[in-house]
Amino acid sequence: MRLKKVVVALGLISLVGCQATQRQNATTGEYETNSATKGAVIGAIAGTAVGIASGGDSRGILIGAASGAALGGGVGYYFDQQEKALRQELLNSGVQVERVGDNQLLLRLENGIGFDSSSHALNSSIHNTLRGVARILVEYPDTSLVIEGYTDSTGSAQYNQELSEKRAEQVRSFLISQNVAAGRAVARGNGERFPICSNSTPEGRQCNRRVEIKILPLK
Image 1 (cartoon, rainbow, N blue to C red):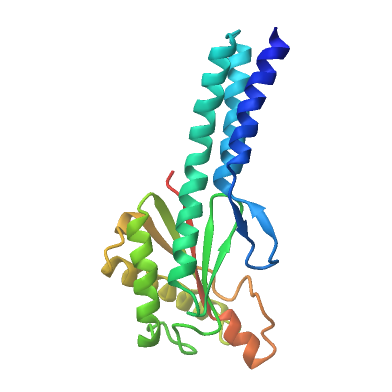
Image 2 (cartoon, rainbow, N blue to C red):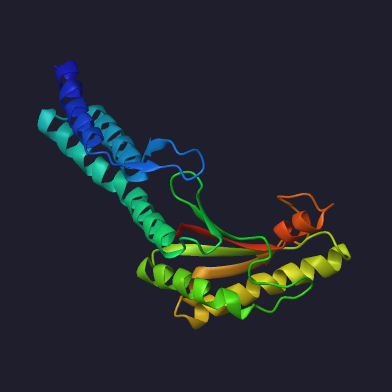
């Protein structure tokens, strides 16, 4: 009987999987199962396990699987929708939208976008892009933001640390001015640490002068 219960529950999980939508990885071009589907399947498995462990009948196991699927798919679906909206909003803006795992998005303002060398003042050229970012963030309020500034290796480490902090705070302040709740966002500076390009060339140094916005689930 227990085996039959498992089979029934797994049938539900397969139905969840059949409803999967696919998203295209912006880097590899390959299609992958989106986070909502993966979360729903994991939730269904967890709900099934609880139902079996508690000695429930087939109906109880099915209810547990369905409840787990709904809960598991929630956060992933929210991030899937937010990612889609950001990609549409930031198309051709020069800002990269990256998916990090299931429940994190990374916006990278790179290649000098927003800041001149040795400056923390936001260029007016980036204002419209950040307004677009803010619009999506306001539409999806159930996320927290970590805004991190970076510099190239020109100048002292202490100067670069302070400059990176000011750059991150400038972006945070701008987003708040566009109705993003202040309590959602923190600003941090990483100085010249964690370069993504070589600091030995002007192009590489420009690449390393950047701000990244991490979008995370609310705790």
